Length: 134
Image (tube, rainbow, N blue to C red; front, top):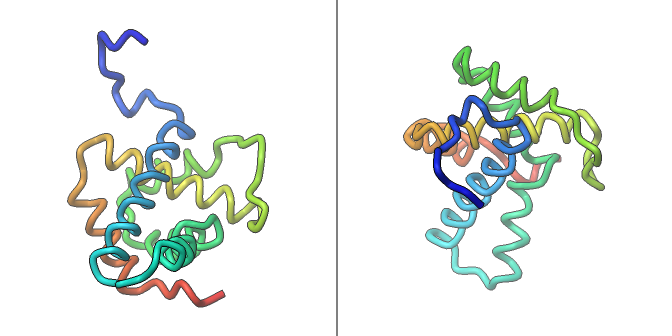
């Protein structure tokens, strides 16, 4: 691959941004679980899934959306409205689209160097989101 010129995040597709955002959320959740909980690898994974599944991300996005700036909301909507060929097994199409939008936003923030904002949103999520609520 030729890496002669870095691509501006504004030029990336919503699904490319979601590809990065998925990893951003996954890493933040894994880090928090390992830093504050003494669990086996299997239990860590089970807890992680409670935060990173499409259903969970749908609920997380609903919790955080009132905090989104106008630009963040536009990025979320771009990701949510991006067409997907498949849907998660345990999520409705609405939940899956919203989770893609949320991942898109996290990827956009991360690639734009807005790590403080990523952490700010994650802290609200971690403090207010109940992963055991259905």
